[in-house]
Length: 419
Image (cartoon, rainbow, N blue to C red; front, side, top):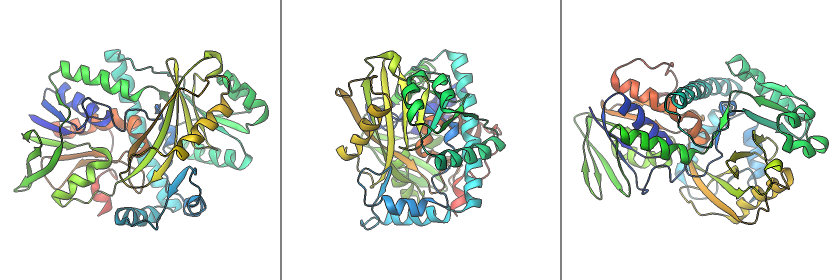
């Protein structure tokens, strides 16, 4: 079959690879000049099934209200802005802020994340793909008794769903990650280690996977502006771009936060809203003072990942539409917390600051699978877990297009759950 994949981020590129592995003729379109140059470019670098807890939870509305007036808050939104898309998304989000919905959404998210982590490991074993990966787990650190208690409660829920984590004392945290020794003595309440989770450079992975896909015949067309998707008689008929029309037997929409814009042409309402995340990347001056294990700081809502001789620090979420401008007030907390936790790792002066839009659904569960159009498939809405879920999601779409039963249950993962 001839298949057109819209989007060359880590999700779209993984989809193209698995489709090519099945022998399809695949073309990938993206407005960037090469794969992995938008949301996949400088994310938190974690393969984090341990982050399967959805954003929507009973305590979140009150917490978000308190954060509204803090420009450096972990989650920033201003509901008084004229933004009907945010209001519509927000109402759906609030409906998911119940204990029952939290458990359901956590199970769905974890189902995809665990499967995807396994697919990535198999892919790495098969291809020896390299992307500054570290396979020593992800360590969550906690500063207060209340935070640690909440973390242990979430860990118990995840363990019951298939993700075991180790509960650690501050001293044990420092044993897992020696660069935390000073913090363990004065500032940590405890930690949780997800030993099977990983970290690695998503952009480097996307670039290398695109090379493997191209070797199988995948054509990547960069610098292409997609104008609209057209349908006829219940099927997609063509994709109109600034460089001509693209046609195929099947189409995959994997355009992240921009997916709703093009789905609207087809009268499909995708409840996806961009959550702008920020990161900084700095050179490591003192390797012994920088972490090797990827760290999630549950107090600052930030992650720290070692990528070769660089340190990636990422966090915060800003619900401000499709604006990608860097706000220095959102970058400063990343620098401040990195200096506090790993003061000798870098001078933190020569840094690369970045922001990207993460395609977030109201329930934090991606949208995977078929649509009312017989030859259109969705692979979008992965939120902060696009890197975590990319390989598994791509494999699922390849299975569906091939007419195979996917290896995971797709109940609750499709667009129909929002009907």
